[in-house]
Amino acid sequence: MSLPVSLKSSNSFSIDSHCPAIYYIRHENDLLPFYGRKPEDYYILGGGTNILLMSEISRPVIKVEIKGREVIHDEGDQIVIRVGGGENWHAIVEWTLQQGFYGLENLSLIPGTVGAAPVQNIGAYGVELQEVFVRCEAVHIPDGKMISINKEGAKMAYRDSIFKHELRGKVLITYVHLKLSKKPNIRVSYGDISKVLESKKILNPSPAEVSEAVISIRRSKLPDPAVLGNAGSFFKNILTDSLTHQKLLEKFPDLPSFPADHGKVKIPSAWLIEKLGWKGFREGDAGCHKDQALVLVNYGNATGIEIWNLAQRIMRSVHEHFGLKLECEVNIWN
Ligand code: EPU
Image 1 (cartoon, rainbow, N blue to C red):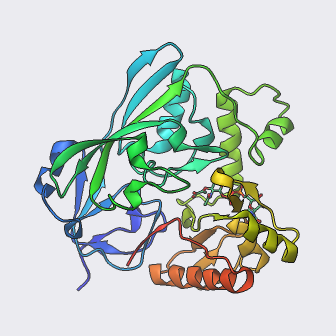
Image 2 (tube, rainbow, N blue to C red):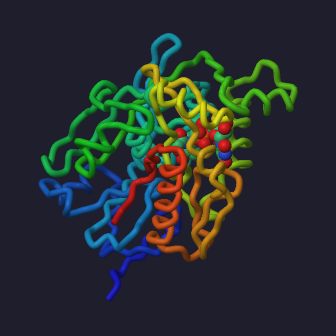
């Protein structure tokens, strides 16, 4: 018999997986019954926007709904805000802009919750969360303790952090502290932002105008999960060394690339996938999006396994053709 509670509306891929029960956490104390439990005894879900459910979740699901937003430090041009892990990320971006607090505008319209943002160090249009992240408050469930993890402790890197490794499944992020500025620091060098602003004849954009430009680019390229199931980029971009990059360029002279930290080179995985003809591919209800090859989509009733099978075919084909290993950005539950 299948488990009683459907998770279809709790994951942006709209996969019809089930669990025995969902516990909504609106306050740290709601977690008390879980204190001391092992990670195998529960599953923590945020906005469900970065997960592929390949099977049922046979343990209770904990859904973070802790709300709240406040300024906790205000000095000169800098302020620090403390935000509940269950707040919607984009709603907080909009709120900061309304208050005249800047730094999040390039991260507009990223789906998901505030508590999930540090887990994969969300990033877009030339900005990553780690630039504004101060610390987060969390509950270490197996230890039954409230803890604080600062920037150094969070070990953030490209779409990565300690929450994906040592602390995976163990901590629930209750509050996130972010340092923002009252002075705009406009960042428009990434991709299409400046093109969009130029087309609107905006020469000195305000943070709100940068936000609007980012929103329009995202809407034009990325499918809305409310309309077409997806979890944003399914794969990470590839970070490689300059020697491998040079060798690839000899074979594929039109290969695009971007400089990355520590002398690495970032190769857009979407380009590799598109080059191999997957962009727009559909089999049953599982597909590779027609406008952004990094995004896998559920046209309606695809199962998690069907999406995963397509992901694997794409990964194999990229490996066979380019000798590069695609890594998933999305968390896989199996
Ligand atoms: N490209 C293609 N084909 C495509 C799409 C892109 O060849 O279908 C190539 C182009 O060369 C383009 C380059 O990829 O110049 C970069 O494309 P884009 O700016 O659309 O970004 P991305 O590298 O594909 C990353 C993030 C996105 C984020 C955008 C913008 C990852 C895994 N993804 O995508 O994040 O919105 O940059 O900053 O790093 C997400 O994490 O879910 C997400 C959507």
